[in-house]
Length: 220
Image (cartoon, rainbow, N blue to C red; front, side, top):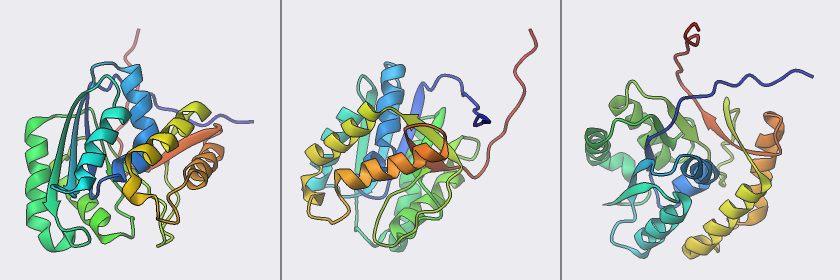
């Protein structure tokens, strides 16, 4: 049986995470955040969310990301753009992403994927590479009614404990989403199990990568 090719990056000390809505980052990359932050104590995390500012959802997001980024130097900014109408506020979204870029030169950027069927997600995904031109960017996936799950090319293996912790934290910190039919443990664990199968792990989160520059390790 062959092995899945792995390219292990250097330490992640500075991380930028972006979401169109409160809960996007936690749903799409919560397990990855938990693992990265625990492996690299003191990592700096700059988070930007475009909608939900000034509402109860902002409070949910701040509490959740505090738990999903244990031990991190975390800064969260939540804007007040209208949910579902980010495309019509492109200039404000672009300015916010550029402002984020001005305060951090990240080792890794995590945001929505360009192939996401939700217009808010897709709009933000199109802006991110215009600000973070020379950075490794991972585009996360979110299960939803639109049925836009595709074939991601990058995987972050997770243990069963991490996947269950992610699900528990989502339910604890986003009660406003509990009534949505897809917001349940079966969904979160089921997708993680499928992505685990695809990378020869028990569980995983999957990401889209548009461009990666690789090189050989230095000679001894």
